[in-house]
Image (cartoon, rainbow, N blue to C red; front, side, top):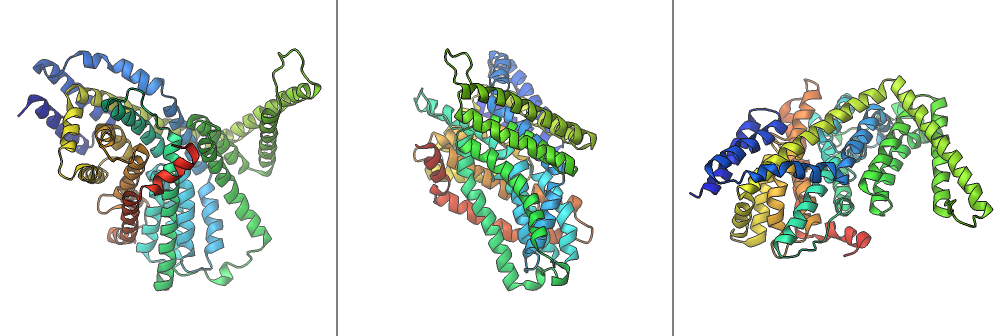
Length: 528
């Protein structure tokens, strides 16, 4: 056997062995890369100068990569919405809205899960939050434990596919690099870039369609098995008057507006993902502050009003004061903009102070630092691993293997999807995104007839979402089992998710066979 091939196979086997031992992933990736880098240097299969490239690689891929700056900001946005009890109010009001219908609570959980998934993008956080808040309520209302647990687990995994989410941000960064590498390998030395906005646009319709399919399943279940999802008795759900709809609007509109503003600014090209993520983080802090008391709520409303007027002035007036002739109107707008900026700054400072005083901000920031540090540590370890892997010729071995498969592109993609699905039982999306995707994506994208990085990226995201939901090793099931009451059996959770797994597989097949479901919206927005 060729020495490079032996080293490549051994490298993956050692990596999997250490990962299964439960050792921290970041250290496993970096340690395995360093170990085989030294072995390769001693055996003459690796030039040591490859390891000297690591600082430049980290500087280029991590420090100078503006897209990755969006990660802690999106994490802060999601954690702040979670800690400020937005989910609790949404569930309560949506439950009352649909509660008079059979299956209404299930529909409410699906909708709220989709909103939380879009804001957090972390499967564990969404499943745990929904499990703690809604599972006891659904069981108390007479829901079948299988249906209740399956609904919550499925809604929690929507963060894999619904933008804006951390999963898609990380996947966009990796897929963009893989796409450029694939074009260079094909002799195209002016590669066409792929943006995170394009991947967001590609994932939007499949994500919303998946939510629709979940809701249709809830409706079908309510019609065929009404006893498994009873409605809330009318006497307990009375009084849906104007006051209720005001409460519903107050609970639903702000987080929905925030998500639409963040996603809309990215898709319209007004802001980069990093700029939009910063808007989302600030907006989440204001939203969390508005929930403290009426006085703070008024300050937040005034701050947002001042910000809206400031945006209007910036869009319609020329605020450059260095011109020779400055009209009086522009001078007035200039000083008004300064006053409004000061007003926004003071309002934001008050919101930050109030959330800090209530203990919400500190808890949210600690969670943000913890999650972001984990992601960046894994990224550093993965950079060392992939550098050594490429130095050993592993990327060429993988590419030759995939290109040599009978059946061409179809077989190669099918094999990679199966591999990622199985790895999803044992690895989180971060590890798979940073380790597996950079290795296989360039080879898949270099094949003739491929539909491009957007389609492949969405297919991978949907595939991982299905893996996290599939018994017996799906991550979402473990998270839900950890917070579910003891009377909910593990087998009931497994039975409950099976229909949703079938829905996921159906969605995967639709994306695989009808690529326009993914590529149509990016073409309309970004052209090409």
